Length: 293
Ligand code: NAP
Image 1 (cartoon, helix red, strand yellow):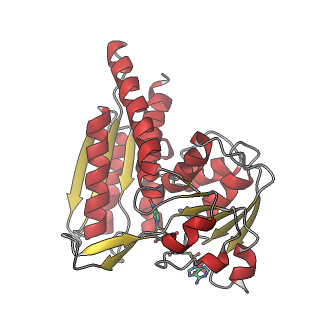
Image 2: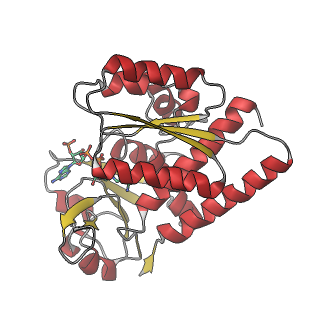
């Protein structure tokens, strides 16, 4: 069993971006600028946004954090997105999800200029990705793809089973794995809550991607010997032994599944860190697309 080490690979990507920034400075090129919008005080969202800002600093990107209270109106949030679209210095915009229920998340997503949509959630970016055109690909699926690429795993002809069909993980990673690229060229099965006999499906997987959001759901008897297991899940479970009061677990029961695998991602230290690294890559690309270099 080999660990797919998100910490190591994401650090490599961050370092490559940092060096690219030094090069850009010496060539007087624009420095990428990421604007993050955070609504409310959700603990998870605060952590994710703080980590994104910290990574920008590490690389040498500019970053701006714009905060609103939970009570902010849809109109004000739309105006802020519009202001950021029009701000020529801003290359990437992200609105941290979830946002309060009184705001239409689709309206906010579609208000972001596709070229600045570094989360890759805008229908234009999703459509371009489906067609295999240059696009900002959603950070989590792109991070999984990059991880497989960096470990030089030849996925052609493999059977990839994805558990979950969300717009931000399950659907896009299924498409990326089926694409005529490397990684890619897999035969993909998408499973969801209405799938009959999920175990019969997962046992056929050469690559199993678990993105359902249920703590330690995938057990050893659901995994084929020698499979590659990618665990996307992030669930906080109460843990009095931790300073934070909780521990993070994935969708895979790591201790019992790992010995059966050829490769497996840990949680934490796997897909989550790759998500941030790919968001940073999208931000660099947005800057290059906007400035032409
Ligand atoms: P989501 O929108 O809740 O989607 C979950 C999907 O799993 C749905 O398609 C659902 O099916 C399916 N599902 C739920 N229970 C199932 C079951 N028992 N059997 C089969 N399928 C089942 O979740 P998401 O946004 O994709 O996120 C999934 C997990 O990944 C969460 O833990 C989230 O925190 C984590 N996540 C991690 C990262 C990262 O950076 N590592 C990024 C994003 C998300 P239906 O469609 O039929 O309801």
